Amino acid sequence: MKSYVGDRTIDGVKVTVDGAPLDPGVDVAEFTKNGFEWSYEGPEPRQLALALLLDHLGDKDRAKASVEPFMAAVVANFGNEWEMTSADIDQALAALSGKAVA
Image (tube, rainbow, N blue to C red; front, side, top):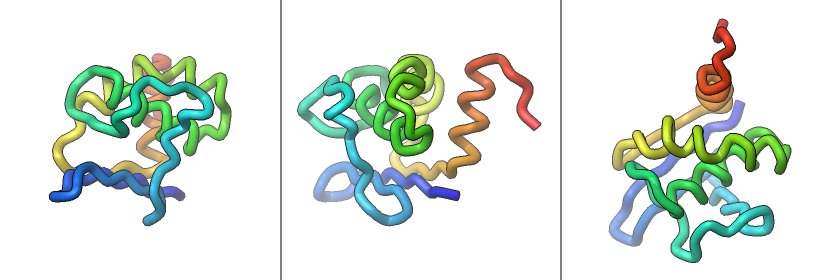
C-alpha cells in the first residue's frame, strides 16, 4: 500500500509517495506551472489531485475524469500537513461515485 504525504516547509510545499517526490503528471495535463498546493480549489490543487490519481490509478483517463470531484472533496480540504494511503484514495473515489465502501 502506497503512502502519500504533503507538507508545507520553509522551502515550499513537498509531496511524496513512499518517500519519493510525486510526479506532477504534466505530461497528461498541465493546469499550472506553479507546482502543487492544497486547502482551496484552483489550478495548483487540481495538479495535485491529478498527480495523486495518476500515481494511484495508473490510468490517465480515469484520473482525468476524477480530477475535479477529487480536488473539490479531498485536496481542497487538506490541512497544512496531510497523509493518505492507497486505501484512503480508494475510499474517497468510492464515496464520490456513490458506491458503498466496505
